[in-house]
Image 1 (cartoon, rainbow, N blue to C red):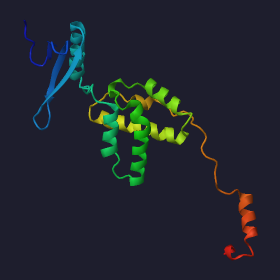
Image 2 (image 1 turned 60 degrees about the horizontal axis):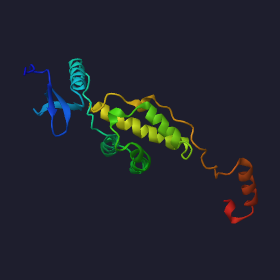
Image 3 (image 1 turned 120 degrees about the vertical axis):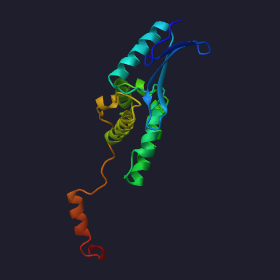
Length: 196
């Protein structure tokens, strides 16, 4: 069996998992720890193609995606560290929206596999029950979470940036007075203690 040269990566069959495993060293972290990316494939041919793609990406400086990193992990990271300087009420609102709408739909989904089509379909499905403003906030949370993951080389693409907010259901009718109602109220209160 021929050994690969340094920097070409590793390819081997894992009997326990019954899959071909590829790994590639991509250098060292600032703390001196070796950076290694791993992936697996069902066939040796697929594994060789995967290793070749990983080597090409590393050679041109593309970030190495973390295939197991989930949408839920990205959203949790953004909620914990991505909203510095925001009011507590805003943080709480975004946390509730994420827990109620985003995490049940995409929480366990691998971030690298999330497509713009998935997000479009999800938003369209939610449009019947949520206002346009709420849909806009949900998309903003998703975009910001993925952008944060991109900045940390955990994913390459932000498919949510390619999506538009659909029109949601109409909001509640306004409870404020019309101009005529306000004039009538002032006229009625003119000779009472409330007029001041």
